[in-house]
Image (cartoon, rainbow, N blue to C red):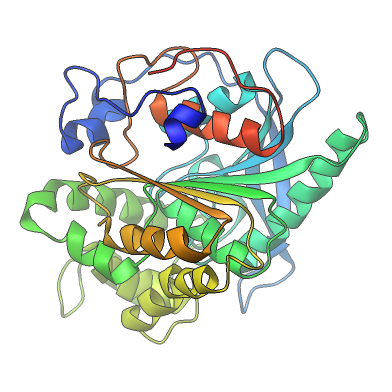
Length: 364
């Protein structure tokens, strides 16, 4: 079993975070104290939106290994829906990778976090127009790191939730990644939309939607009159009450889709990943997908089906399904300076991928 191969015990939740919901909410309810952010801000140029002029910029934060040493690789780290480079879960994951010997590039997607003022608009589950040039620039940064050592430096990707979906879509489009880890990532957007609309998830959806609407209205470049009417709830349909409604009014038209159904179908990586499984994972980097059966936000079914196909035909794909863990939770009894169980799993999987010796530390 993969955790054992990496020197970890199977995932067991730590008290009192026993359920999928508590695992999901743990970072919000009891944040972990992290050192001050010492990362170096980097501005990455990307093409302007259709109809725009010149170039836009995205803000990333570059972290070096801890303690200082030659990096084993460069990991591009992507946040999920409503997140940013300074969110606790992303910073904790980044620090775990730094302690494991990697340089890290924490990216703020279009409109997110401290990069809000640098580019108009918002991101989507498939944002290759932004992400592909960012990954090319990250490859150049990896080459700069490699100038200080013998041999090429691997460019790796790690995505939390929707960030993993974006990286999978980029990999399917030929992004220059040498390895990829996705935790709790939606593979089928329509299934995910239906899941978050379940009555039990009403508070989750309300919280996410509030962040998305605030982020969109805070755009210093402005929003269209039609968008403002929808976001402020002044349209014939009243306030936007669901993520699907937000995607129909904002995300789909901004990214060139004719409808929210078109967006969900075209930006869901699952059908194309299944095809690549049948072709032996050809053209894709070694990939690890991690998902918990008790994830309250993202259904596990698409990942489970991909795992079944991968077992038969895809040597480059590893899928780890756990009974518990919630949505990007994976808080275990042995969590400590190396991060939580999901952080340690990611760091050790990347170390194995680049041929580094096993990392000592907590096994649980």
